[in-house]
Length: 359
Image (tube, rainbow, N blue to C red):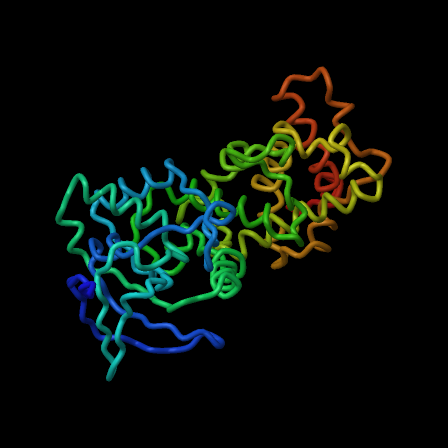
């Protein structure tokens, strides 16, 4: 008679922690703290299109992002937002009881739904400094998600929610944050928001590094260079005229280009890269010269940065619009001045004659 072989489950270390149990829609979720080394041991990545299993929603890893996160962690930083994982192991299961959780630290027992690059960056940092593995991180765990459920969570995080602009830290905390690069960060944040907002006149017109060929017209570096010095707290033009928070700065720039766009759209020139001068560096810089040096002050005096107010100062004549064809052959400095002078012409015409001045 054959001897019956009894296989015993291997013992694994366990992690015990206080746990918050909740539901997001119909999906149960458990949030608790865990050491970095334990989440590294538990996790694995199921890549969509490569791994045939429920919950495979992740994109392939980016080495550049991993290296950036490794440096960020080695500099002494950590993560306050939670990692989201999906427990899939059939032989071992976490136990939930009386506001506490017991998690067996089983290798590759849970898919990563959100945080795969952070985990890979942590793992790379731990190879250099083992003490990082003892840091506690916040984890939200689901159990046995289907692919549609995992996709629902993934899409909610990556499409419905937008990261807070980095420069908004200054708006929230003021001088508590010493940000020497505030002007660069703020102008980059403004460029991103104006480029991604479908209601923006600059929607899809700003070219970010790494963008596909033919995507965007105004280089990010052009946008940042034109604005960064004017966005410094206390000394920048925007702050002098009390356009100090992100939303007001974005609205003033958006309204300005909307006012210009209206004139050029009427002449069927805005959508044409061969005609629209503002989609080239010289034209964009000329427009920003006028905006910074003249228009902000006039709007502030009027107490209005609305589109109609800006149009009353710009007052372009459809027949006198300058197109890129008119600027061909001119050097960048000259073309920039032509655009600035065009936008300033109505402003100068609105001044009283010398006979009307009072002394």
